[in-house]
Length: 95
View 1 (tube, rainbow, N blue to C red):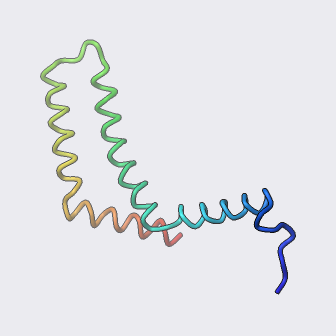
View 2: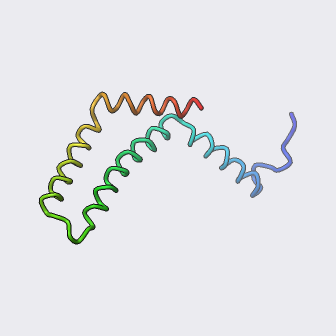
View 3: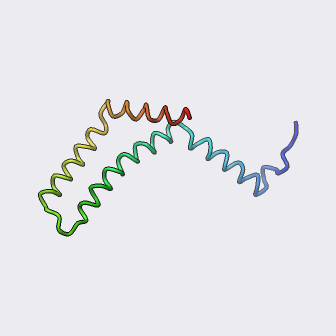
């Protein structure tokens, strides 16, 4: 058995161990799924947020935007959307 140049207790050894752990974690299926889901949700909410910051925005339009966001979030948990996210996650973790 050969030992690495740096022991596990050295600063370099610790950094290597942390880097390996992070590399393993960010390529995990669960991590990728969370990133995909958060991206979709935040992308939609950010569009609505930007439109609502307009000082001359119509209140009726804003109410419709909030309702559309509510419907988006409700549909987001549907079986079809979930299947699409699973496929996206599988494609990314395979690469």
